[in-house]
Every structure is written in structure tokens, then in C-alpha cells.
Length: 158
Image (tube, rainbow, N blue to C red):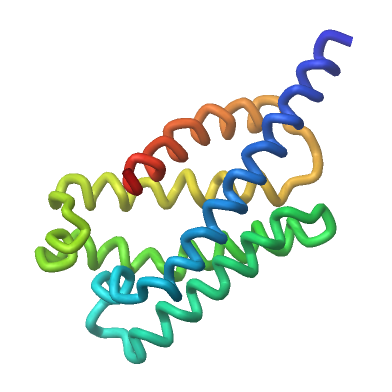
């Protein structure tokens, strides 16, 4: 009974994190269309069709973010986000390497480096959101990493 109540609490917290991340991804995805120049600056030079890449990544962020809201499509959305986060990782590397991009984002090289490492918790959280079952210790671990991860990204927008 004691562990059962804790599992229910963890599940409720997980559901809250799912909704927060869904809103986060939808918001960022919309940002790709409202202010594409903000994202264009971190598209690596070696990739073609920069504007198309900004729009398509924004579209997929919106699609996968919306998918998180619904139980039937949540796994699809979470797995899609994992692939998307991996595919956009070169933008984080480029931000770390480009003084121009760092200037536009008003961050230092060290902050760009820290930003790169936040891709791993985002991927792990997306994987966690793809799981239907309760895995007590993994759930606790993901709850713990969710908090600094979301706080970090909230701090970027303020």
C-alpha cells in the first residue's frame, strides 16, 4: 500500500512533466515560424536549405509536442522528440563553435557548452515519457533531472 501510493504520486508528477514538456515543445516549435532568424543563426553552415530546416524542425516540434498530450500518441511523440533532439544536436555544436551565434544568443562559449549537455536529459525525459509502466527508480531519477532541466530552459527565456 505504501509503495502503491508513491507510484500513483510519481505517475501524477510524470503526467505533469509530460504536459509541461508538450507546452514547451509546441511553444518552441511556434517560435521557429514567428522568429526564424533566431534559429537560422545556429544552423551549421555545411547544411543546405537553412530556412527549410528551421521550419521543418519547428513543425515536428509542434507535432510531437501535441502528440504528448494524448495517451494513444504519446509514445510516437516521445520517440519522435528523441530523434529530433538527436538531429538538431549539430545546431548546439555550431552554437558552441560560432562567436556570431553566441553573440546573437547573448551567451558565452561556456554557456553554449552547458547548453549542449542539456540535450542528454531532454532525450532521457522524452524516453521516460514514452514508457507506459512505472519504473520506480528510473521515474525518481527522471523527476530529479527534470527539475534542473526545465529550470535551465526557463532561465533562457527570461
